Image (cartoon, rainbow, N blue to C red; front, side, top):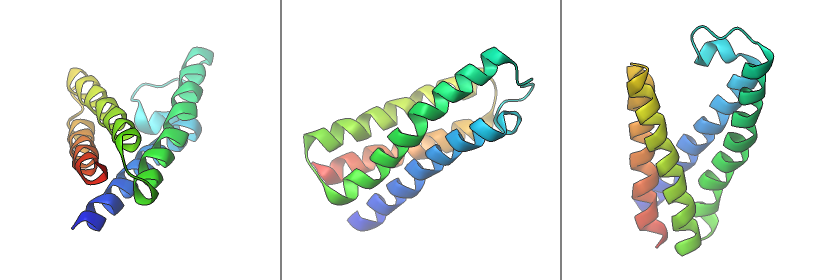
Length: 115
């Protein structure tokens, strides 16, 4: 069961990274009404620059290491997902809220496995 949760965490974290890549190449798939302007492109680049490496770290590191440092990393990943839940609920994007809730739950479960 422990290994299952860690691999589920990997899949979810890499999924977040994938959304960062999708945002780079097709922002309209993620944001309704995206027009591709310079300001929008800037924020998409900033989002992807953080999401892709952070998702890879949050996914892979718990498979190879444990302890407080990894727990803090997973806690940060869970908090990012909580922020996504709030954003999704404010925008009335139910699918995003559900996905972020599942992701946050898996990150929190993984915290208990790395401590």
